Image 1 (cartoon, rainbow, N blue to C red):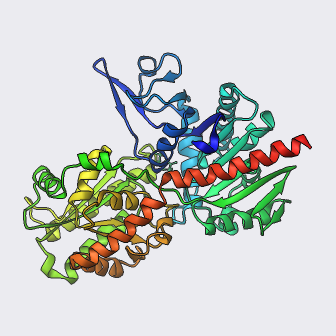
Image 2: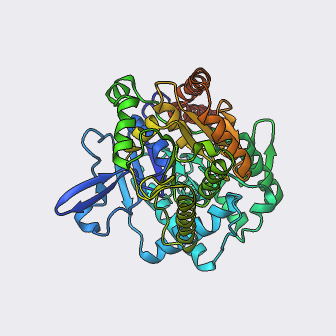
Image 3: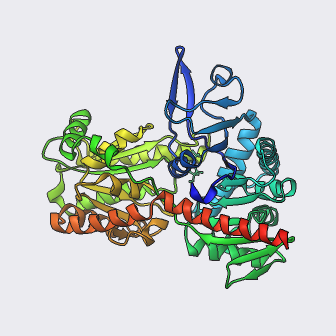
Length: 487
Ligand code: F6P
């Protein structure tokens, strides 16, 4: 907050921080499953300002939102939420089409072929313009701080820059950035890069993604790159390209005091899911997305039961999978494959009253997920490729008893910060199965040692540190701009 004293802050993201739905005349408020929302929302609560997002929560737009401005739940009225409503065609082309069938598989090396359609691109461009217009309309000053979130808005920074040349535009790319060859297959690669270079600061999770981006610009644009300062000059503007590893809001001691004890959480979860008392519990929490390695994880559980028969009828694996982008065939068929694998493994190793895999294919509120984390012996995060991944950080934050073991994919950005986890290659089923065996047999003292170290990292490098570093850099550049204007 101090870095932005007196400055106007505008956030732009596709996903809204809250959905408001009217059910039987009652307003129901929900937080969507989104790493971006988990990270940016606490920052916005601290900064205040305006958040512009795509309104997706309710079919009944009029009942929810008469003025395009929606109040947040009680006690959370620190910022304004301005929703942009899209037509079904725009949503199809911009969100499902170009963003999620094009850019999403393009940037995640997950072996799903990106699809690029001219029509999707047109919608993507038009929706970026719509949001850029909203930023200009919402801005009360000529130099607001605009926080642009993610791959849905690659063109928006340059669009805003043209109309508000003195704005400080911070763009954060929440997903990986691939190497120049991979990115080069995008038919509109130059337009995307030029759009992003309208930013004052361009943030990625890791140095590796920054390096890939700089090399991509070097390959496809006539730009000046200063490697020493990590800056790119293009079209008279300079962009700082930096790594800012995203994180979570560390729970306050007051909030943590209210949590039920791990024993109570365990009793509640076992009771609700009908898990036999003698079982150990492993959990996975994801959106239903082919990048998350859910299938590889199930195969690893199956292999573990083949290889270490002593765990048969002694372990339950609970997979929470929030439905995601289900309008896309790739996502629907992925879900079917997971369901088939679940049935196969349960038929092989489970009993009807005690299945090995419990697939909970619905959205869960944070409080329920937190109980599951506190009840679990092991948490599995096996993304095939992930910008950062915040589930592993949430698991660690939930374990104030310093127990539980984290198994973490080496292909999640978080692996670089969390080496005390059991790091695995999720494509290597044998290795993940062995890690599961190691986790289940890890002595309490070792669990404590690893968990204490992980907790101190996540506590220190929390989401305010992420935002603080970016905003400090922004404040420095703003000051420099003001001084140079005076000269
Ligand atoms: O962090 C990547 C991301 O795509 C966010 O942009 C998004 O909010 C989240 O994952 C969930 O995806 P979606 O908003 O498409 O449901």
